[in-house]
Length: 108
Image (cartoon, rainbow, N blue to C red):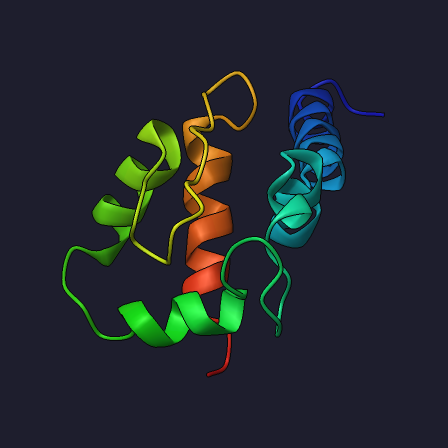
């Protein structure tokens, strides 16, 4: 192998490993415990992803509002049962944004 090709090959392999290790938003929501209270198309303890997407569809600032509610928890937004806070150690900021973008894209 030509020496100049090795750095490029190493970069390609590193990128492939990173992409292979990246979890899908649905998997992240399960790993973070979201699926204990939320389901794709039916209410459990909290609203379905479909209902969340419908409520926030087309709203400016929806992502920021949802991030705050996930991080701090919420009470009275979807009924009497409060949502517990989800700290960054459970779901980091980047993964949280990916999960919320996925939720907002749920067909309503």
